[in-house]
Image (cartoon, rainbow, N blue to C red; front, side):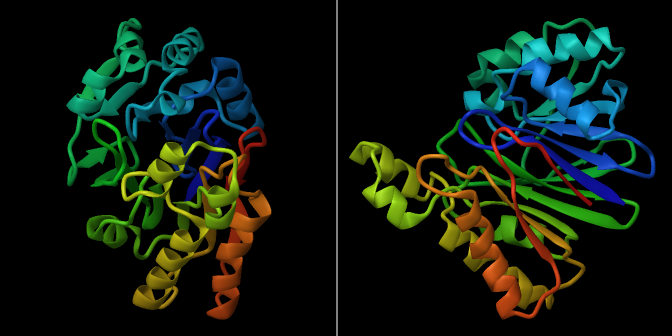
Length: 270
């Protein structure tokens, strides 16, 4: 069985761990928080640093990469030397990623959309997302007959992303902003436009619409948990994001549970 441990999620920094509970192997997805918070989050989730065998990078923005170098050095001191997986375009656009690759023993494995990455007990299927980065990606993680979908930082749901998120047991889905809060909030107009654009972030409404499509196309499937990700602290509320997803589950009489990942309080599901 797979487990998802969200160490932090939001514009202040992002990091999550997918654990294969059978083998103990783990993949860290993004690292936009400090090493202290990563190591503390691992401890809180009952994980050892040496279980981190791989690091997957969704895109080059600093809230997903700025903690990489220090965290990799901390992991190395604890005996873990993971491989970093990212696209070549993301590597070229990210100074924190390039600096992290200077850590002794750390390897780099480039990927592209459509690849299936072997991560030691798990397979990560890479799909594109629509974001204003050099490139951006989400992942479908599979292991021991289980499946987890992970998609944040996308202004719209691309067809290949929707396909990759079908028939998962755990769904981590961006629900960044409440549309009314964004319109009426303090952000300058150009930033509001960027967030609401097709290369920005999914709103609660868009996340709910995608959840409905998944529920209807897969008949609910094996879904047990839906996690609202990358919730804005300025343009959303955790309860609003969670409720938007929970309301659709209730309307479809589906037993899955809705959660909201937070910036400073780690969350584990699985």
